[in-house]
Amino acid sequence: MSRHSTYQQKIGRSGENMAAEFLKKSGYTVLLRNYRAERGEIDIIAQDRETLVFIEVKTGTSDQYGSPETWVDRRKQVQIGKVAQAYLIDNQLEDVPCRFDVIAIVGSSGHRKIRHFKDAFWL
Image (cartoon, rainbow, N blue to C red; front, side, top):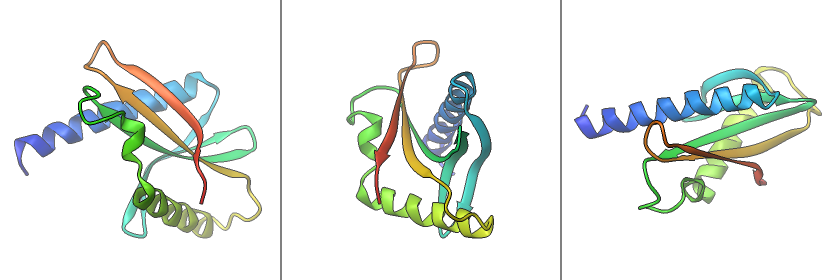
């Protein structure tokens, strides 16, 4: 593994930790992190009152490559949808209100801004 990819993974993990803490402080119950299925992954699965929320976390050190929330393109949305469907089937969940959120984190450690986009996309 290259030093660059290890650095990116460290930033990603740090962002996911920050997002999970943010969600807990906002009243969410974090159910799972890094759920894998269907050749994909959902960063965080949480409960917001009666709604099951599938959350993609994107972390960037700057906006040099655009805002992190824009990195969740249609292909990624479809992949997240397939993983969410697998989660619902695996847990025998039917008629449960669900939504897809994106949490974007920008900045270096100590100076990060977090943005939470509820209902970020529909499938």
